[in-house]
Amino acid sequence: MGSLIYFNSASLDGYIAGPDGRWTWATPDAEIHSFVNRLLAPARTHLYGRKVYDVMKVWDDIPLDDLPPAEREFALQWRDVDKIVYSRRLGAVTTRRTELRSTFDADEARRLKDASAATLAIGGGQLASVAARAGLLDAVHVVFCPVVVGGGIRFLDEGLRLDLELTDERRFENGFVYLGYRVRQG
Image 1 (cartoon, helix red, strand yellow):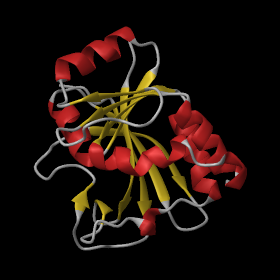
Image 2 (cartoon, helix red, strand yellow):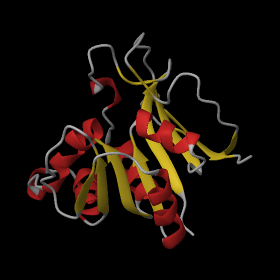
Image 3 (tube, helix red, strand yellow):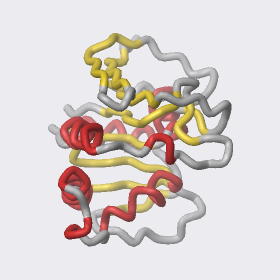
């Protein structure tokens, strides 16, 4: 059986995007990009909401020769995984290995986990929160950025409770800090 992990970067006050919807303060440098590549490498399927998909789809056709090594590695990894996008507004997906669903179906996600020997990754705080409420989330990984943004899109929904066990931590030279947690079930 596979596991479902949630990874994202967040401000110190718990936002993945600020009040203006921007997240440039979370742009990874080469050290963090390489770390994230290793963290997400086992994931063979990525689950996205529309907003995250809109950000990520650039990796599908960006010219590889123009990229630094860590970004090139990520682009190749991203192109090689299956992706499911959940959106009521999106009419079609334009990237390879991508399927579109109108809504997140917890039963379908559970079947995907049960049928997979590999990790599944979920992107976006709202979608990860829905999966967590359904008891599907197995791990939470966050890179905290040295910034407070005062509002915006939350890392996870307000009111969601998860009991977590710290499994990994790392400090980066640029002041960012990674924390990895296992979700305690029950």
